[in-house]
Length: 295
Image (cartoon, rainbow, N blue to C red; front, side, top):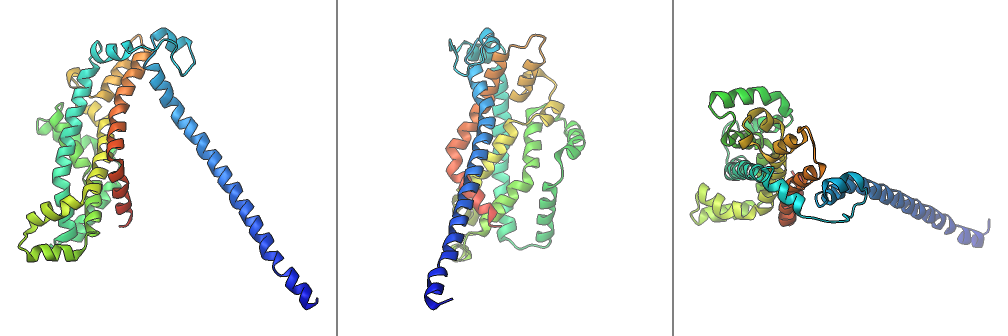
C-alpha cells in the first residue's frame, strides 16, 4: 500500500464507524421515545376517562365510549359532593392530612438538624436504626400500631391517625432533612455561632430558611401518601362520619347499585388536591430530591 493510499483510506474507517454509531443512537432514541409515548398513553388514558366520566350522567357513562361528554354537566360533581356526603369525607381527609403534616414539619427538621450538626453518643447507631426502619414493610407493624392506639384511647380518632402517620414518616423525613442540612457550609454555621447564635436560633434562623426544598419534598411526599392512605384508616376508623376520602370512595363502590359517574366524580376529588400541591411546590420538590440524591 502506497503512502497516498494509506492517507486516503485511513480516515474512512473512523468516519464509517461514526456513522454507524450515530444511526444506532438515533434508533435507540426512536425506540425509547416510542416506548415512552406508549407508556404515557396507557397511563394517562384512565385518568382522562375518569375526568370525562365525572361530567357525564349515568346513562352516558355506560352507553358512550367517547372521552368528550356529549352533554357535560356539573350535576354529578354537585350530587356527589352534597348528597353523598363526600364533602364530609374531604373535610376529614384534610383534618388528618394537614394535622399529620404539621407534626412532621415541626418535629423532623429538628431531628434532621440534630443528626447533621450535633455530636452526641450513639448518633450514628441511632441514625442507622432510623434508616433500617425505612425498609421494614408497614404491614408488619400494623397490628402493634392498632393495639397501641387502642391502649391510648386513640383508636377510631383522627388524632390517632395523625400520630400514626407522623410516626410512620419519620425515617424518610429525617433522612431528607439530615442530608439537606449536610450540604449547608460549615463556615456559615461557625460564623453564626461567633455572632452569638445558639443551637435553637441557628436552626430556625439559618438552617430552616435554607431548607425550603427539603420542606417541600417532605410535604409533597407525605401529603400524597397520607391523602391516599387506606389500610391504617380502614382498620382504625369504624364510624362513617369519621371516614376519610379513600374510605368514602370504597363505601360508594360497596353500594348495591353503583353509579359510576359518581364514583368517577369522587375519584376526581381525590386527585385534584394532589395535583394542586405538586404544581405549587414542584420547583422546590425537584431541588429537594436532587439534594437528597447527593447523600
